[in-house]
Length: 224
Length: 265
Figure 1 (cartoon, chains in turn purple, green):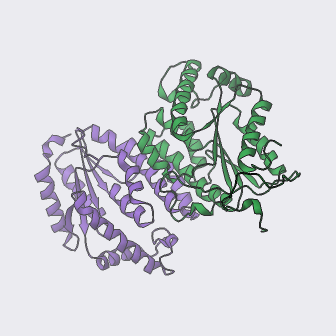
Figure 2 (cartoon, helix red, strand yellow):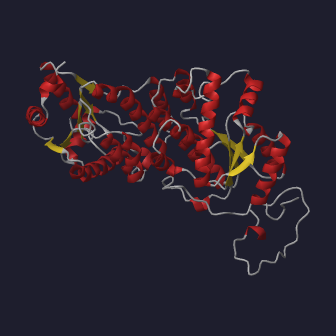
Figure 3 (cartoon, chains in turn yellow, purple):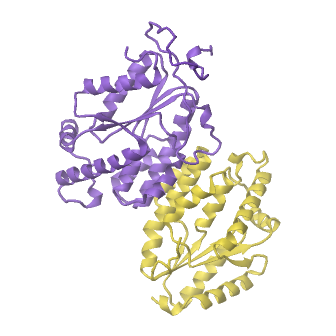
């Protein structure tokens, strides 16, 4: 797999990864403000799936029809739609594309849900790698608390209830998140993640991320 | 369930056929065969538990697949085999959305491919596998090969497809109804008086003329099927014959496989 830069795209992709409650959305949002403030062409990908794919996803989730295999394929379809319709055209047009989660989310989630790791990775190999990936890293108890504070009720799939890890929703969520974290840690070296300490104040994390981006990308190339 | 000696998988000591052929209309349970997946398969499914038979019929629109499947279903049921048929775009999960997507032509190549794979996986897990566990005859009106061929003629990478469909069960037999493009056009006209946008491969931009595009596209599909035939060993059936002739041919071939004791009767 190659990065967008290696494939000769004029644009660049920056992905932010981490378990639920790591603070991805906050950091990505602040990055957008910073880049836009410099008059650059920026797009923040929020998984605006097409209505068609979205319907199928919600239908499956609502009725608990999904198995690990179909869960993985529905999400891969959703991702492919976003990739083909939005990400690739924008990167061809020289945009900096910020992704709140990318293929690594799928790698960790689907493998933990029981799909063979090689199968999952090969499915996603139509997609290029991000030019920079930030991994917001914190101990499980920290992210769990944050994730649960913002989610008064966990839904069935979020908690991984279909995997029968535990009859208790919160216990199940904890086991699932722990396994996902392990998987991320394993990928960290393989995919050259930039690890960011997610327990630090939001401002310090953002300052480090901005510094790393300035050092790695020539931002003036992406003026609109 | 009563034990039946013909079901036993004990190795025979000699080739001599010693059993008497029963004179009966109803058939014995099918001889069990070992099932397997093309790749890693479905997590948690043990192919050894699948006692039924998976029979696939492939072929273009107008090749007579559905006519044959409904006749074969009747015949199998008359002989006492519990039978179901499955097909493409029939999953509860995404069939409606797929139909809408086909009408709008708004999805990319990879997205469309994965959408069909999702539909297939849903039917495999929720219909085909449970039926095979229960010992059913499963007649599949097309299988992964049609999906692969459609993607391959659109330039999707073959090893990528092999990985995606590593979830699929290897069927007991795959029949391919081979019909010449000229005859396909005629059959499509006699049925709908029109050609279908997708079956004409209009999205490929081969020709702006639908008739020309249909002929060219079906030619590409046939060539691609021929390549897959080497890899997957399809049973090629001459579909240019009469419905009855094709049916008799299929019926005999299926009977040989599922009721070796009664074949030829």
